[in-house]
Length: 340
Image (tube, rainbow, N blue to C red; front, side, top):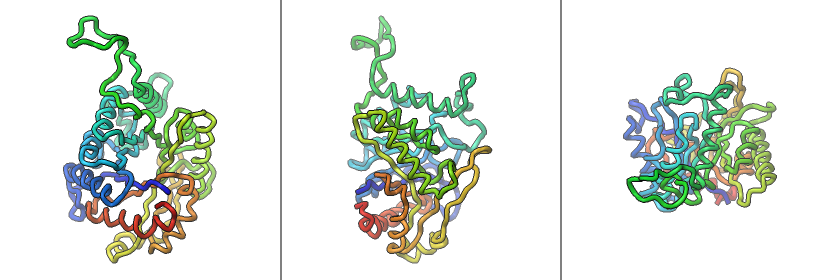
């Protein structure tokens, strides 16, 4: 049994073939998509976060709106770039969104990936401390976010406040119990997956990771997940870890499916550079008739290791078609693989 969610990159552009022509379209359609996904029995609605791009950016208004209009589906991100964040303000936003949803937030965070502009976090007012890299800064902010989510008081109260204070040091409000245990780390390397486990975060592993041994993508990702689980056990956490992997999977059941995705049926892993000095391996897309798809996915070692599969969706094709794509997986593929 696996949880199955969707992951939307939230693209929009004034292009004649897009159903998402502007930012309002993608925001409102994302809400509608999450509502419809819950109705068909999907477990999660997750969204990418990118700045300076015609994609979804500030996640908490969207997550709050979805939380108010749904009742069961998990709501998350994959991922929030912590280099751009004020951890304390983020604690407040996340707490509010989690309370609105009734405790369904599953927040994916990370040190971030290459962005649309050079050192975009500097425009947000942040820069690494002396001797730090931007990756160091992102991880330090993540640790501060995790610490403040615990809800312990840390701020000295004003002796003459506008309103009465509770006794002792003050914490950030609103506080949502349990949210600290629902934070995920997007890891591109084996080392950061181990670091996530040591710090009690669940693991998100996407459709790419740093190439650490030249093996096929799904094998490297499975190795990463096993290292993460070993580190979690060694850390002695008293709760079960969760692991999600992202995949582009399309069951070709209509002519429209074949028109859109049939050319991806012979996809393969690829190797390249996402940073100047960092070689990465990119996982292939899956697109085939359901019986072939089942056989292919059964050989994916990383999917076997994960408890959650996030299906990346072509969000620009609109809500109705994306629900068709997701329904096809739930109906024709998931049961045969034991995901349902």
